[in-house]
Image (tube, rainbow, N blue to C red; front, side, top):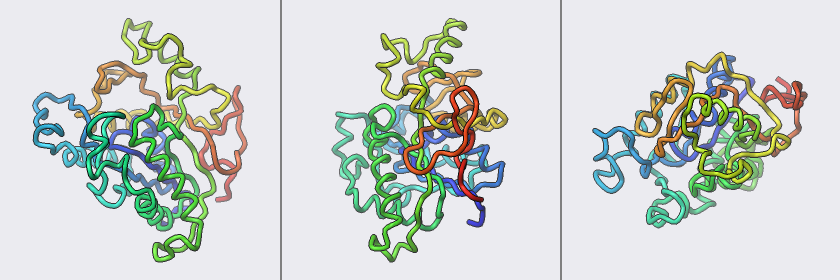
Length: 297
């Protein structure tokens, strides 16, 4: 890759990238940055929203993972991302299902994967791509999904290991990532989404919580560091979301996951800087407006 700006995103399943970072990815591709997606599983345990494809489910033909490769390809085409990979190759690690389910015990479940092995696969990508910026989940994987937690562990370990000359030197020259971000959902932004859905008389995924502070992936505004305004690329995110029909139903400015509850589709995406120096910011919160803020070209 020859771009001066290089971004690597580490996600657990196909569609996670589009939901959390689709607009950001589209924006940076359009601006000429090299964007690489590393997905850790095929999402074999996902629920299926398309009735005629129900037989692909894990407890039937168990072919959903292969089908979702095609969905991910279409989503990446919509976002303009040409470099997308699976950790260790497609099918190396299997979707572990939700916490406490029998899928956690599958021999290839990502949740129980050997961390050193998985880290080495990720290090190979980091040393090849040489990203200045890496994006992944927080330590709880956003909402506690075992594969999201494991993706966080692998990504964070890989950032450290990639810079260590003693770690598998055969995987390439060491590389120091300059900035690491975790996906973030600011409380004020989530509240705005709830208000918008309420105005339409629609149910929200948050309705079952008595307080937003109880929602695992909602964070206080003051821990957020970065806001990426990619509204100019909202149509690309929308198209990418529609490319994951087994997992996402898109309805106007809202989308529904397998629980059929809506979240607002936002083309302004938020992050929390956890490694590296924070660049200059602005606006009422002083948030960065660029993941590469403060880095030399």
